[in-house]
Image (cartoon, rainbow, N blue to C red; front, side):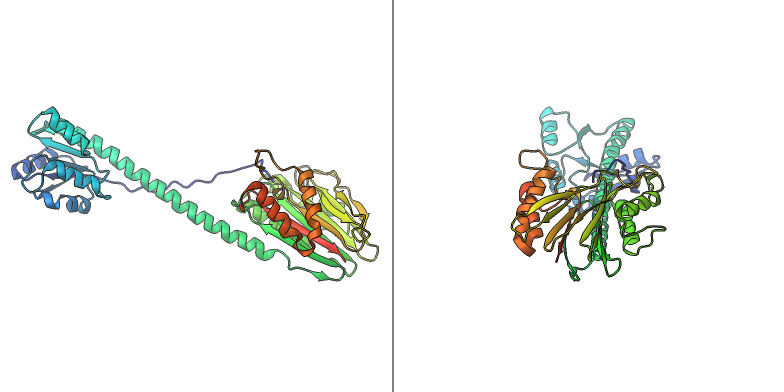
Length: 405
């Protein structure tokens, strides 16, 4: 069921506070000392010096440099080659790189930028300018690091949420009833949780030796909240714990549910439901639906004159309006009649032309595949999957079939 009420929950990740860490790579100790003195008074800047270009990449990784200053002319490794090494290493690829040179040669500048340099300074640079550039480039890099941390935290959070939703979906499945094939009824169901965990649940049980109750619930929206409300309603029906409810009267049951599960008391969530009671001695099926798709009854199949009846009462969604009277209806049931009840997630799927499969088109599928004996539900699902071109569903896929034997 489409949600009319959504709420997003976001947790801000705790991002690492990175200090500005400068690494100078230069074979001249005098340059190293000069830069150290320039930065000595800056409390938020940590300074590191490396006079051996062959150790530069390893040093940058070990000190977690946020910016690298490097000479362009060194005896061990040419400065442009060293820049290529920095850019080829995954751990140093994005660290800002300022090339220090003794010349303003445009060609040298162009080569430096072509191998990945972010900036170019003629040494010895002015102190104010050097500190300003160090802060500017480091801030950009630290922002990148924190963005990556936030992105990774989001990925981890999504993985954890997906695992929890999958676990919740397994729990919902574990609560669904076992098949019954005795006492005049043969039940079977098919359930595929949506990718977002929906709010479907269903059940059936004997109220007494004569009356068999069956129901399907579809709570608005997706997520844990919708699933919890759906399970709560299912448990109330299966345990027959609703105060004052006459479980043999579908309209009465929906009325009690409507008063018990008011949307303002349940995070503005409401639900649709189809509820029926089969009286075995009289072979009557009483039913009521609150905002739910009609049950599909295929009757008189033994006589060869099978016909389809849609079972529905015109009542609103449960929990949406107070003091509503929910009407019941009833029909006679012949031997081998088949009843299908389902949620809208079963048929509200996209067709190849971009339109949505209609209820009438779905009913035609049900009627056609009902002839497949015990494989009918599998055949229905296969046809729906073929239509939408995917085995995943945006909403819970829930369909229940009862043969009255």
